[in-house]
Image 1 (tube, helix red, strand yellow):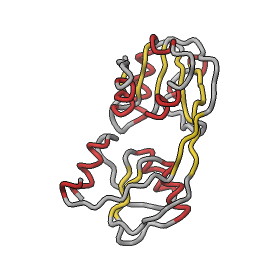
Image 2 (spheres, helix red, strand yellow):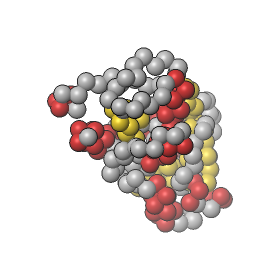
Image 3 (cartoon, helix red, strand yellow):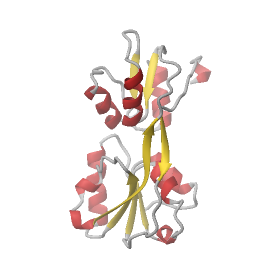
Image 4 (tube, one colour):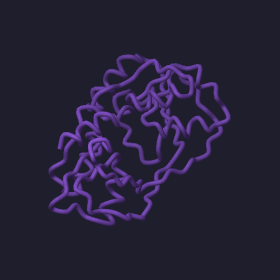
Length: 200
């Protein structure tokens, strides 16, 4: 984006806190719904889970596993998280799945599985960081519903501003807050996000 003469002010309006856990329940699969779920789950002392079948919501989460030397057995790609959930449910069959997750997870994938197959483990929480320093940009880019909530507590979307969301969940959070016109890339990746912004 900088090569295309964009001036970028990147600022996270949230912070993450690890939540301690001791036991890792026995399951055949472990499914990660974000890079942070990979990061905070890997803090645990019990690393036996690395030998299990691993699922990831998208390429960014899959790459977080690959950076740890792990190869996901399932990677759910695309903007339709419900479709990803159904594909994953078909892949696991009747096997039980462990979901390391945030305290306020939307549980999109879990909802596609029978309750008896789902094991949840909260490994981190998201906190709003009220420290907005810049809000007059021509384009506002949001990468999570939490960032949407934190931003709109401190500022509003101005008439001249274009709004971009990394995926449909973030776009939905914006629309629930009254932001009607939201651009979404064809895939929820940083590369596709950059391509969309450069095309506006």
